[in-house]
Length: 394
Ligand code: PMP
Ligand code: GLU
Image (cartoon, rainbow, N blue to C red; front, top):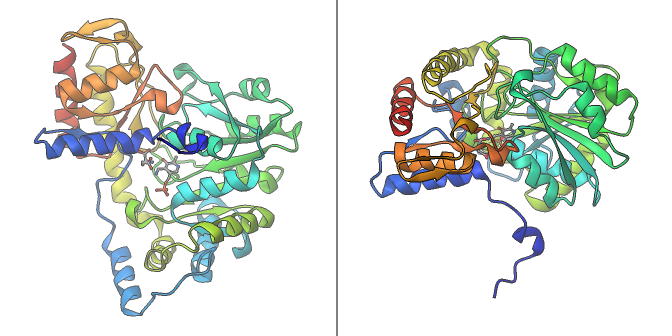
């Protein structure tokens, strides 16, 4: 008999990871699947970072690390926050985790009591909803529109706030829409929050450097938001280091201390070799990884142009990250190749089975009219994938 806890029974499997696993499984069966489901750079970790890791192994970095991260790494993060974001965080305001994902989980666990509401502008990154729920919080989804570039307006925020609202979580650049909040747009949200001094903001900036128009702004840069903003970042995306599992936060000391307490009971400090390598990554100028950003920018133009050539794909123009999030509701209710498509999940499955292209349903991101396509893939794969999609839908 299944004796699992209700907590786990109510937990969804990460849709991004599930789709990647399904694509892998189909490949082992011999199917030629093009994977545009996972948000993972297809580049190798740059050599200068790999060499730092090799050096760390040879220097016998092999012991448990401080739970909140090596001091040298926290110093490098503090310097990075100042250099890239004009944010002043002392090392005591910084904690390093096993990926930004663990940082998000720590934050939910230290900030939320049962029933506390967390406002999630939709579409949101797939794991926010379940991380909040696992920690007994209540996600409150705020629908946004493609016309407004999938961004939450001040009016929408105001309308979503209740006496139970504890936090707002968002990513900018956004996974999955690629939208970037400007300073003015964030200021408008911050103005609403001035009337609600007990609401905290989680600003997930993991795609900070993958920004094609420039102009990244952090909520914590506003003096009146600094104390109640938790800035989350990591190296998975900009440095092509997904498997190294290093993320970090900058926040008020009491929040950082609490996250460290939780992490100390769950995983301890993050991996020693990865931390040493990340010191080198963060100390380098962001210009060292610009070649990847330039390539993502080219791919964005390519995929937008190709998608434009298919009937029924309505897209915004993503300014950052490496996803497009087309509205495909044009196809709902239609039967193609004997398969009836009723929603985005059906559509994404149709693409997997009939076009052999893996995408992710928008339902997992709180928007059931869209699918997410990751263009962290070669230009050849992108061209071939969109050709197959077009053919399958013809
Ligand atoms: N936040 C966002 C918006 C993401 O897309 C991801 C993707 N991995 C994460 C957090 C987690 O990143 P990681 O755990 O690899 O640092
Ligand atoms: N963040 C990536 C994505 O959205 C990686 C997968 C995951 O961590 O869920 O695809």
